Image 1 (cartoon, rainbow, N blue to C red):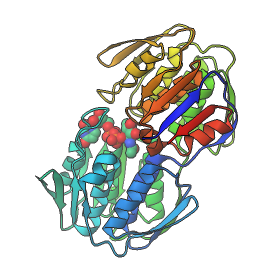
Image 2 (image 1 turned 90 degrees about the vertical axis):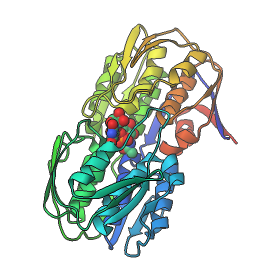
Image 3 (image 1 turned 60 degrees about the horizontal axis):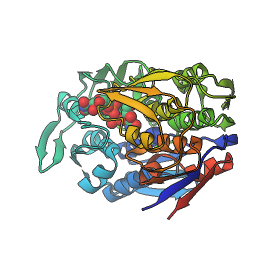
Image 4 (image 1 turned 45 degrees about the vertical axis):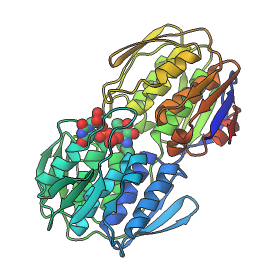
Length: 416
Ligand code: UD1
């Protein structure tokens, strides 16, 4: 199993290019199932999850021709409507094939994702939404089996805001008969990116980016070319790493408008931030100030940035409260941070972090994707060597992380 070794204590300095967003790429790749024409996606990040999704689509019969940073998908020979357990268990986003398959082929079999490290994460809202659109759904042998002659438009209210739930139903509704209204829908920028791609394919969608999305189904969608939006979580992770190490960095090919709450929190921590076009520059002198964080659906503070801010708070001046309201078990990084000398108390979904003057390197274990990013940040700050085990989590969501960090001056290497 691969590990990362980091010699901490070096402020990050320099420029880094931000990759395409994982959480936009995965649903948009699934949109290729909605048409027999070619869907060309550019700015695709080179990530393990993107590779897994490509393989899953290929297993279904989608042709996927790759060039540097782009893949052209063609779904004219799809003959297998099943997403097997092996794929879904390594990547929950595989659930996103459900809506497109049942909408276009009237049949889909997708493994139930099961539990995952950060919580139980059910998919009941995806299922209820498709049922409201007329799909017949049976749960058999651990699989969701959905059938429908043609899905019908419906008014669907989400009890809980769900990002992939919104995306799955938006794709299904694009080919349904009539109008679908998604209420209490997710407002995440990745939902908007998917809607932009679907519109380019001929879908009729309004209201994306708000909590009410209206989709008027069409008979057929056609091919398109779409550029994947920049990754706001990768952007935020580099910015926090620079702030925590007292560095000065510039992100290229990103967007500040999708990072508002994160930039506000970094400014509160004492960072100087300048935005110009598609660049964000951050400079931090001295020790950051502790900042309270409470996660909630967009536009509030993203759960995918919670762990990274926890790492920042570990060495900050003062104490901070970190409240996680989206996932019930997303503090697994806490015990690893404690191994580096952090002082954190956890009670339910609330952590209280008391900033310490310095942390010391140790061996730690990554438990999930964003927890891994938090440990990398902590390792960059801690004195001496930090070795992070199980970094396959990191490779699922961060493109070439060690070369990007090395480019910024970090002393980091992969141990194979
Ligand atoms: C997406 C992101 C993930 C991010 C999360 C929250 C992708 C590929 N992943 O995950 O990085 O952390 O949004 O911003 O985009 N829920 C239910 N029933 C459902 C669906 C969800 O109860 O049918 C609950 C979940 O357990 C969780 C909450 O709703 O407590 C939000 O989850 P959701 O937005 O669906 O997360 P994902 O879409 O899986």
